[in-house]
Length: 221
Image (cartoon, rainbow, N blue to C red; front, side, top):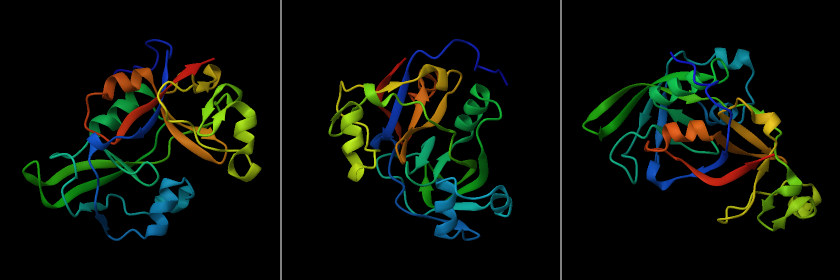
């Protein structure tokens, strides 16, 4: 596999939001069953390596209905706040861009109704949470209630945090030194995080049907 990571420095970064183009996963279950507590632990990066190793090696993910909004299996589907599932081509792209950085759990994808003419869709992957990176320049970022560090500190009952503004044209500033060489990560925003990607990653996936879409183009400082 070609390693694309060193081709050129990152020029832009994008905070990712949910895209309706990627469809809505209306219901699914695992076989063997995976308790909701384990699913939450995976999505929030709360499980130890031992707990992850104890999971079934390749469980079946059974989708119970078509994806709302699309007639195919999206390349990236699930929920930005819970489990995220990837098609093999997206997993391979991430491995090419950032070898050994990301963690994946293989699954067999099935559906109880035909999607794109099939009920068996082959190997897919659960994406375990990407690296959490403290790269946000709070003093030069717009939040939902205003701009900069004073507004941010007033958020969340005075505990800091807050959420990034999703209004078009608002500013989000990241420290280049913390994200150089990265392509998919979670930007720390107080006690929360935002999925964020490099321009190189977005250029490679922008034509895919998936739940990710750029919400904000970030300034790199």
